[in-house]
Length: 275
Image (cartoon, rainbow, N blue to C red; front, top):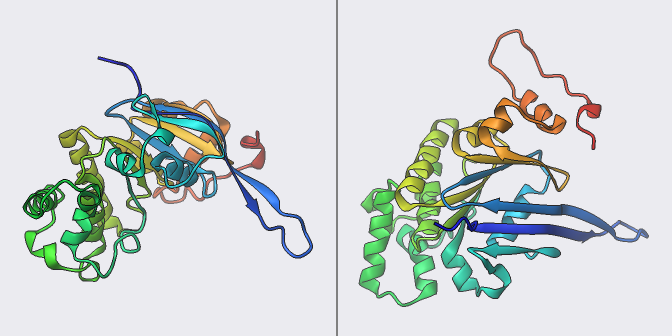
């Protein structure tokens, strides 16, 4: 078996030119700075960090929704820029944070799920219908919902639709950007368990973006910690949560609120994680 990674990124940078305001020159914001990573088949890479650390920008670069300023991304050994949009979409799919805003409110659930197949072409109406109903069953959506609209579904059902749409073309890599943060706590575990089951059944590889460390600890096989666009630490999940080597990672873990009565809020000092 080849040890070639499914996804490999080398020295990625992403900068933005931002208006400086009235009579001020524009300034450059470095969202991603020199990020490199390798993701093996079947792995779940969790990417964590504070808001604005660059993890969602990195996710958009990986999915091809945004171009890096410099650096390279290779998928299964091939450069991403050499792939057409249709080819890339057939191999890498995103699942976004808000299942309502990512679904077309004017389309039925069956039409939404079937969209990747219709864009790729080559499948007849009967085949598309069969695969839509198969994917609905796989993601726990009742057949009667095929003709419903997103507004008629609960948040958990809408996220299942988003997952079904992402998986119907059988991609190899799924990039999940905060896939449960917009859902009720009671529904989050259902969606996480569904993602785990689908990973095992379909042989998927995940990149999981989240600020919820409990979700990452539950799902990920390895964790990458980001701060201010830079990779601070990258190791197996057990190592990150059990014996982190970075002061910034220790700060993140210490910032988790605990239900223990009387413990209070964690103390965080700036000098603990400044680089």
